[in-house]
Image (cartoon, rainbow, N blue to C red; front, top):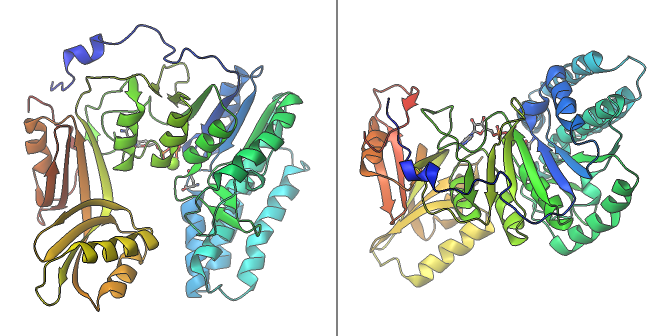
Length: 460
Ligand code: ADP
Ligand code: ASP
Ligand code: MG
């Protein structure tokens, strides 16, 4: 069987199970969509939390299961006036009510709370679609977290785990770039320190929503898809948590996504640097913005399994590791923009500056770039119509060709054999290497169908 771990990687580690010697008190836990996807899953979360009933604990929850994807469809249907928005919302509501029926008696107050929250979407659907799609998106999609947090809080309370519900929008202040709110740190720190410690002082847990925040005008914002891990890091930073734990459906951080590769191996310890590099380029297990606030305060991050909570998981901390196995991250939905001057003039500094300003203004995420005499090639995440809007805005000055449906492979600590295996069945459109990083933008060779690939070993 191919094994790609360097032997010393496993041997060169300290024996201690706690990689962070500093002992503070507060813990922050985050439970994502998969961990609260149905009634049995929520019961399992309560079970896990029984062991922490004496700890000061802030709990962050995402929307249940795939609710956010379903709410996105409601937004789309309303914006496009397909007439389906109410029916799609009804399905989401029914899913939540069915789950609640398994957890609570019919006269429980949580039904009214959840109903009142869903009504907010109905009010939006009663009006014509808002001109600002992103604004409307945040007002609707945020409801996923608002209802899940009501349900989980009520269930914990019922299970003998006193838990107070906190509106994350009273803590996390963002700018007014909807769908990708940027945290206003000073106000957020003040809010967290004013609101959370008195709640914790009463005893029991404090439970709040991931993913959402508020503008100064009290409009709801979201922090970007999968942003609940980031919310947990924001609370950890503001409250100087002793540690943060994200509970996932995997045993920890693995050498690659187990949905795409076989033979993946758990990494027991990772430095913040490794974690940030992997997650920035698509290791979906942790939202990339999560690492910085934790690193800034040396708060260790544990990635643990909600399926096997006794497992050690992965600890991400200051501790430097110098030997890692090859790790692969795959970012889907990439677009390659081939940008060239219209008059054969060189792509000079003033062109670059213009293009980067535009990229920053539109908050495009650039994953790779290369330039030559008269061209500038950039690989970005292909989100909604951002790429088209960008191309439109620069087309008077530049010719733009867009290649879509691409994948970005990032391999850290690569070995030549690993790369050979990864290239199989792919056309490589752009490639770059440093001593520890290799990246390539690829598309499938047309005749080959996508299937589960063996994770390439260093020995081939
Ligand atoms: P959450 O329920 O918290 O939203 P996610 O689904 O976002 O959790 O993250 C967990 C998933 O991340 C796993 O099911 C796994 O398929 C995927 N994943 C991608 N890369 C990795 C990796 N390197 N290690 C572990 N899991 C990974
Ligand atoms: N519910 C949000 C999403 O699915 C945030 C999260 O799960 O982290 O993107
Ligand atoms: Mg997620």
